[in-house]
Length: 249
Image (cartoon, rainbow, N blue to C red; front, side):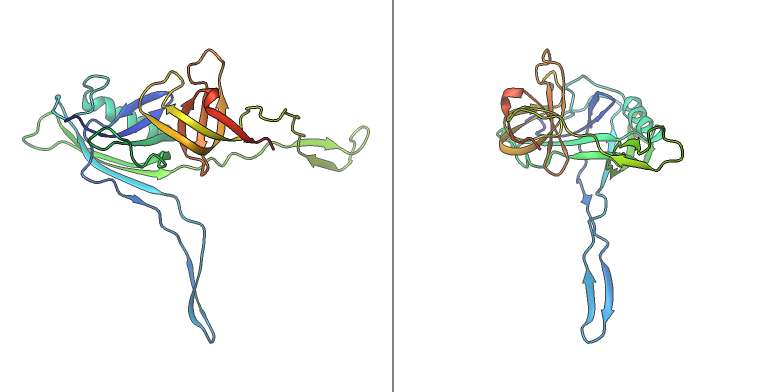
C-alpha cells in the first residue's frame, strides 16, 4: 500500500516532500494568558492572543531508496534535503508547510488544515554508526506572519510645501464592478486547488469554502488564482471559474 500522508514544503517555487514521515507530528499553539490576584476574587486569568505555532519533526533522510518512501520526483540523497532546510535557515526565508492527508481508500481528510508559512528556527542532523548514508535530524519550525507595513501617501498642505505640515492619507480604492475578481477580495471556492499554478500535486478539494484571493496570474496559467483560507493559511491555485466573489470592499 502506498503512503497516504505527505509533508510538503515550498521555498522559492521549489516543492519537496519529506522522504520518510516522522512517527508523530506535534504542533504546539500555546497562549500566554496573564494571571492576576484580585482582592475578593482570588486568581483570575486575562486572555491574550495565541502565540506563534511551533512544529517539530524528527525523522531521517535515507542514503538509499527504501520501501514506502515519497519518491514522486525520484530518489534524492540526504544532501539535497539538508541543503534545502539549511538554505531556508541561513537566508531567513519562510517556507510554505503543507500536510496532505488521505485515508487508505484515497479519501482526503482534514482538508481545512492547509498548513501555514514557517521559519526554520532549529535544524540539527547527525550520522549514526552502522547506518552508513542515513542522516537523522530534528527540525523545529515556527509560524511566520507577514509584518510588512502598509504604504501611505504623503501630501503637503501648503502650495510649495515650505515648512508646512504634512498630511498622511491612504489612496482611494478603485471602483470595481460587482463580482469582479481581484487580489484581496473574499470569495467562495468550489473545486480542486493545487500546489502550483500548473496544477502540480498535492491538491485539495474546496466545497463552498470561504477563501481570500491573494494573487492572480496571467490567463495562460492553468490555475491562475492563488487562494488563502479565512485565517490566512495558503491553500493553493485554482481556476477563476471555481470562485464566486462575495465581497468587493
